Structures are given as C-alpha cells and as structure tokens.
Image 1 (tube, rainbow, N blue to C red):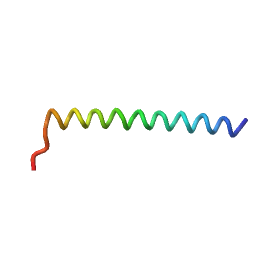
Image 2 (image 1 turned 135 degrees about the vertical axis):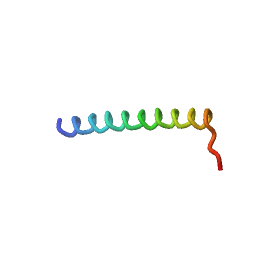
Image 3 (image 1 turned 90 degrees about the horizontal axis):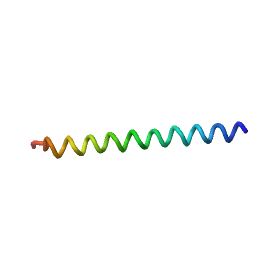
Length: 39
C-alpha cells in the first residue's frame, strides 16, 4: 500500500511538473513571436 501511495504521488508530481514546463514553453514561444530577440 505504501508503495502505491508513493507511486501515485510521484506520478501526480511528475504530471504537474510536465504541465508547468508546457505552459512556460508556450508563454516563452508567444513572447518570442511577439518580441523577437535582437542580436
């Protein structure tokens, strides 16, 4: 039972982590398109 609890919480944390990365990358993408980087 303890292993199942740890695994589910680990998966939950991993999913949230992936979602945060996806949101940040999308915001970064939009920022780059709106304000292109100048060399």
